[in-house]
Image 1 (tube, rainbow, N blue to C red):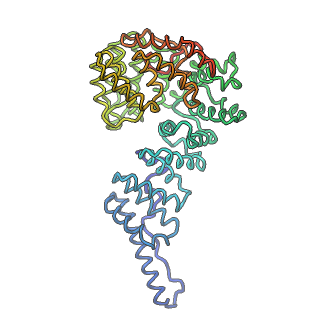
Image 2 (image 1 turned 90 degrees about the vertical axis):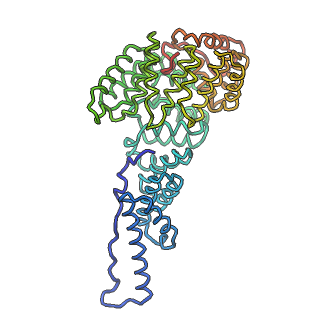
Image 3 (image 1 turned 180 degrees about the vertical axis):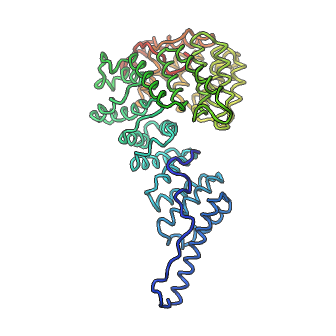
Length: 511
């Protein structure tokens, strides 16, 4: 789970309460009042003792104490500050004990006691995210953004992008989150936020809010989002095709320059350099990308033990990932495999490196090495998100086809079909790899007819720069071209958009 970023845990907590002076010195209070005050003082002292246990890292003892105290009627009679103090300490103890559901409930109570503590809303959002309750996470985060937009620079941007991507594409919660970020004038410090503004733009257009869309489109400058705008007829009223503003190749170079400036201003940032390398690969600057990875590798190697060269050194695996792509595009295939293998052996926060293992399995698929691909898939472990499972099954299909394993082909296609919503384009590519061109054409038409999937489908259909296919990808590439040339597919495209040719690469993939 993310640590606190808005203030230090327990930093604002009172560890004891001041004694209360008698109401009227010199007069003897009535016995009932004396008893009530004594009982109240005793309860408040027990609360303070529990907070002290949490502060001193006796989390199990603190958790037991809070479990008893918070349930008592006397707790509701504490003032808001006292309840916030206790609930925040109790929630932090529950987190330390890995009882995230209890921690979430305690942070909800804390936020109800005092809704003016931004740290409580951030922590609740982070906990709900880790519990895979993404709508609840987003709602807490929206509150944080709306009331404390000035704190956004303190928050790990990856949490923001991951949260948006986990939400249902057509949900009001997703729209509300991106709109809150837009209204807060948030800008990514480490990369490109164009994909977020495209989410907002698409929803405004669907709702007929054209003036709002005209405001949002001015924030979109990344090349692939511009491709989406140019290829989809929904956005024709926004796009001047001959303008430099919507020139994809110009935007690709501009993105590299912008990210280079950000990288220069963030000497200890590795994530921003990963984004820069990725932008170079989109622009076709493969040698420049490779040179930057070599500079980063040298810095990492020269750093003293215990003093990493970058604050976010955990991004090292993605540097190697992008390095492997650059090497593949320069024809240095064996070196690409070696670098992706190195990347896959690095852990992600102590866990197996799922992303690079899947990417290495995909590279082996392209190299027509099915046994190596299957062996790499074994390294991913069971804890995969839905999209990751789709990629895994796509690679199992590729291996089964290469090994002429009819049962394996059937099993993989069955999974991909049943879970297609987790990765529609993964399913489409798998149908083409299996030479199911009729089925692929029907699916392509369905995706184009869906407002939720249309932008992704049209982007996938564009004619980008590509490398010569690897041996295991030749038949797939031919099947893709055959499907796109079909009259029914061409008609489905013409109904909603168009296919253009661009002198950039689609993302930083290996194609």
